[in-house]
Amino acid sequence: MKLKLVTTATLLSTAILAGCASTNEATPMNTDSKVIIAHRGASGYLPEHTLESKALAFMMGVKYVEQDIAMTRDNRLVVIHDHFLDRVTDVAKKFPKRARKDGRFYVVDFTLDEIRKLDFTEGFEIENGKMVQGYPDRFPMFKSKFKIHTLEEEIEFVQGLNKTLGLDIGLYVETKAPWFHKQEGKDISKAALEVLKKYGYTTKDSNVIFQTFDYPDLVYVKTELMPKMGMDLKTVMLLGYNSWNETFEFVDGQWQPYDFEYLLNTDNFGEISKYADGLGPSYEMLFDLEKTTKDHIVVNDLVAKAHENGMIVHPYTIRKDKLPDYVSTVDELYKAVLIDADADGVFTDFPDLGVKFLNNYKK
Ligand code: G3P
Ligand code: CA
Image (cartoon, rainbow, N blue to C red; front, side):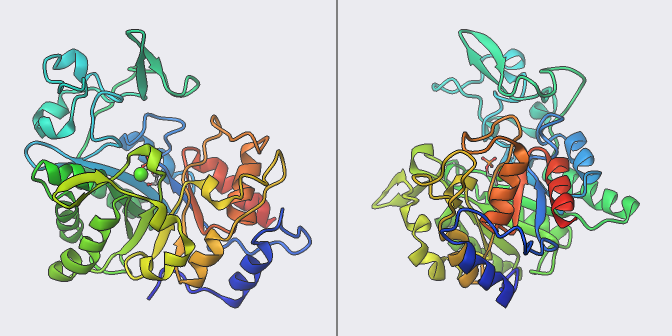
């Protein structure tokens, strides 16, 4: 069964909304089933993917907290967004000789014990030899003390908090760069499923969504791995742009950039829905950007076509400190994504603001 039944009301509202500038304010949409997903935790307030940022998200009324994962040299899964360590840790200072030729420090080149020696920090880039914080108004770089943890530790943390707070917040696990891990001789998706199974997540009723940018790997997960392991989790296919070089696939004996055009073509949604319960597009993929202007949102048919094919849509990522030029406030962006485009939920670095938007809209 698909993640969300497409109701007549949903079909009607998506049909009305597709191609329209905005919703009819006289008949507000029922938003009860829409979910806020804490993107890398409450990462607008605390360094991304720290357990502290997950705890904060718990208190903000989210439905899911996200885990991006990469694999260490000794085959452990750690919760980190990049398969590199250098944007969010002091690895360059503690292990200066361990960069590859491209200057990056790869998670897969370090053991878990080594990674535990690093300090986790708000993200930064190196500009003219200096560390420059990616989001300058966020938590200060290298202040306080944060550490990288394993997927197991995060699951125990989430399950523990669900118990003590009487909540049922879900996991939203993304295997980072399965293609890269394959090049390194590692099957990150298999390892992730093994951990999830160990902690009792095995069926579509389990409170977890498995997400990936790697379509060939999703097909492998869905048609080979999960059946072999007696599992059938909810899955979300993430949609990217080719320019990001997010995914590679092995074709004709060599690794080539994956062409996202196939996934972005709504004619293929029927086929994609055989493997995915939902789609995770970047939020601007929901809009006709040629017609959208300041304070005038024009949605395209992506969400409607996904719903027609029984898939939910959870776009990423709303950040109040990085708004597109066609909105003036973060609330306008939540409205454009959740109401105008009728997405079923959204990833956001500021989960409290997403929850507040939905609560206010209901009123
Ligand atoms: O997984 C949804 C969203 O997190 C995708 O973007 O790059 O932050 O993983 P990214
Ligand atoms: Ca992610």
